[in-house]
Image (spheres, rainbow, N blue to C red):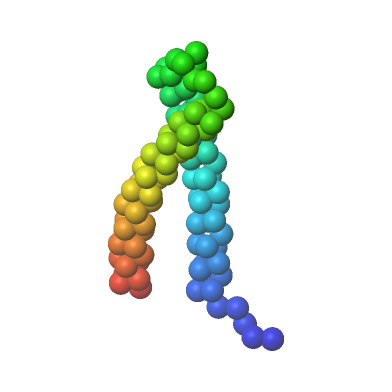
Amino acid sequence: MSKIKQTDITKLSQLEQQIEQLKAQKKKQEAQLSHKIGGYLLNELDLNMINSSDELYKIMDKVIEEFNKDIEQNGSNRNNKNLKENEINQNSK
């Protein structure tokens, strides 16, 4: 059997930590989306003006689309930050 290097263990630990962070982030984003949709429906819409479920679904799709744009922008900014941190960590070794 080959020995497991300490660096391999460290890398695996970091990956596990990132996975847990992503799971938590996903859960948070789902909650934000639910609140955003609910808030929009309660505050911005006159439900009496909606004539069909198709109209309601179109509105929900639009809210989800806008939310996803926000997520992509925030994710891009976060990825850039993580890449810079990884570079710094690699250079310091």
